[in-house]
Image (tube, rainbow, N blue to C red; front, side, top):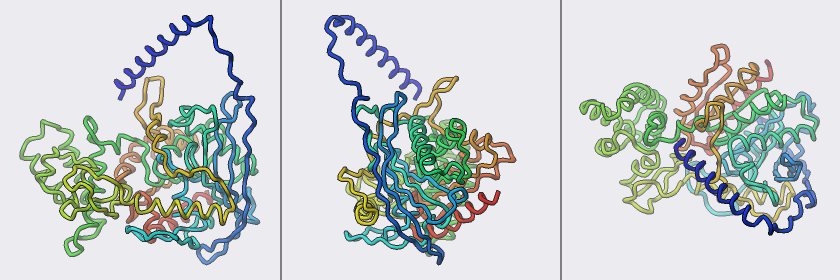
Length: 512
């Protein structure tokens, strides 16, 4: 990683040097200056305000919905990005006592529509659990698990995703990166708070997937740069330390964090008569992964052959793979290969976001999964239902394309962070540690799914056992895992449990 960055730096220096020489050569033929971007008219901030109600726990909550955009300016005061949001606020509530929660998904280049339309908005898309859905029309139902019973909600599309657009002249590098992204979200939240008189409201962040490292960086930024104290942070399908989910040469840690998830996935697809309880399988796998398996990987090529065979045999029994396959993988099975290999004999592969989902192979002798059934079976319903809801219920009209996830944003993302000691590995754990230490009243909720092959629950367990918090602060983090995948809310029963746990979390935080 550092070598690649060093080489890239040298390349940049070489290019800059050539540019300087070229500029000197044509100094006498300077082109006419272009009009300054500041001369462009200020983009409009528009919103559509509607009203509705939702029934949660037998209680009717009447709310105002605002779908609109806020313009963010760059350091020179020029409009740079238009951020789309949908806010739901309870009518008649005291805004100084009523909590407000800011929600966003990950990617990093993905919009907030999954959390909005599958999980916590007032309307939820009715879909099948871990199965393909029939085509449109898709049905929207009252969401009896909406978080509007606990808090006002503001769903935010990250810059460059959904209806959030970079404006002409904006540099994507100013937004597509760990620290750049946190600064942009901070600008949006501060503007929203000021415009809606919510400075004295209890405040929460709720991020999913890449939204979790965003939350860690963001809460620290807002508290220490903007003096905006937060009450709670909710991390769903967490990954703060990227080494925990990136197995490969030189990084055995992620093989350890993935193993309990692979055992859980095998349990799910195994014949019911052959399996015990999920929790017993997970406990056994966790003990094995953190003990004998971790010790074996630590020894590398020095591992004695008899121990190698023993570890391979136990690992095969836990994961459902053949001992031969595990041995040929040198005890290190890449996650995407596990997704392909587990059900190969059936001509199927498991999902990545949620391994309960299965799809048919396109290349039965291929080495890795060709696509993600969990994503393929849900994204179409999400797109159609959200755009219909935005236009027909929120009365928000926008003819622009609404990309749920933008590949170019993901590919161009800057994961580097500079410190006085040089380049840091991609992590936002230190940010959360600082946020919780400088604000000892801050509470953190960590949730995830046992069948998540994107951000395995073992990665979250590792991160929060290495966060470096003082003993008195360690109890300020609570963790809950569910019988579901990355998008926990796709399993209706898991969503009910998730909501119940969040209900208790909000109550406990607000009672401090």
